[in-house]
Length: 140
Image (cartoon, rainbow, N blue to C red):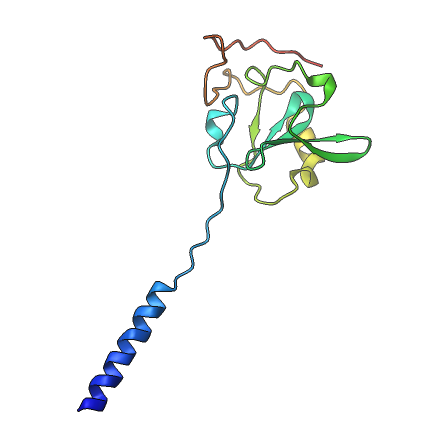
């Protein structure tokens, strides 16, 4: 009887240890920028048609081509330094879950050409600083 109690006690300890040893895996997406599209919750990348660049929400970097190479930078390319991210269209890449959205660049460029807009002005996560959300933006 004592052996049976010890075996049951040992089995319960093993089961308890197994239950506590669960592994939880989560995909972390960073905080979206205030100029990000309001419909872009939970996505990692935005495509910005007017400047043909991406924004990586997780890393907080822009991804754009220069000199035939894709660059990751915390700043936009110099020629777009005055681009109005609040007023420009951003496409939340909801169906993309990889690390290199530019692998689909030709498709994005074709589906969302420069000047692309979807009817109504796009809503951002936050209002443009200064108290108004001006939809006029530089088109380069």
